[in-house]
Amino acid sequence: MRHIVLYEPEIPQNTGNIIRLCVAFKMTLHIIRPAGFPLSMAALRRSSVNYVDDIDMVIHDTWEAFLSETNGKLYFVTRYGNQTPDTVDLSDKHEDVYLIFGSESAGVAKQILKQHPKQLIRIPMADKMRSLNLANSVAMLAYESARQSAFQALSKEEPPNFKGKNYLKD
Image: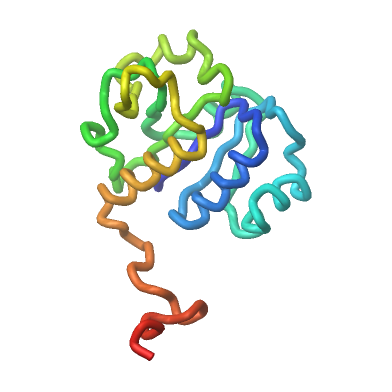
């Protein structure tokens, strides 16, 4: 199973977008407090365009609580990483994979990153850029993880409860 972890997120719109993304890719979302906005269902429902009702989400009070409540491979997406997403196996079928993203302004705490030097992933980008938007970064890694798993358990055609696979044939 694949997981997205938001370490101390600050912007509710990013978190709402990531909720929708996790629902679409069948990923569990973990949020590590503190957050820069209320983590109430009402606040999350508004920022996620109501997809919060469909999300598998766990809220952890601290980094230490997250570590004690989870088990699997941890990967940190950070500008200090020395691996690119395509060089890391994100498709492990036997162990949970946690993709950890830091807060919009500060990232993941330096002391945490220093404890995991071989688990740091960098999204390659032009050297003039410091970072990408959090929700965009999560989308890139979620897609790469799904791609490496051959999009297992994800629909590859328009479902009948929407317009259906024959929509363009009419």
